[in-house]
Length: 176
Image (cartoon, rainbow, N blue to C red; front, side, top):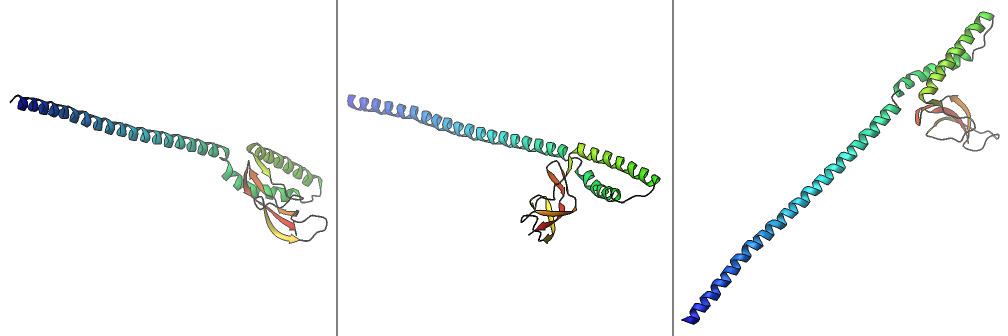
């Protein structure tokens, strides 16, 4: 009988050990699950933070671009006016009254050009420059021994850019 009692005691101790281990294992599983959830939440937070930083940078770039090119639509409207001024100033005038009128037109033209220069509008250099399809629009090709190949020979219409953006390319004749 004593042997049975000892076996029962041993069995009870084993059952107690198993019972103690089960909650410990369950606790480990819960702990591991909580760690995984924490890791997932941490990763989501990092991604969200990176998305926000990218959004903030993109918005900042857009704002800077808007400020930089805020006058683009106005400049696009004024470029034909500038062309007409150029044409008007090329006309030969006779008589004192006409010369005074032409002088006044030149002053207005210079003031107009100064205002555009202040906004960052500049002419695109053409004659004697190498043809660049980003800056020039080739209308004709000619053969001229005085120029190298692919060099702009004549400018038919001036081109303009606002800061680093082309508003209108120069229309040019290019040497073959």
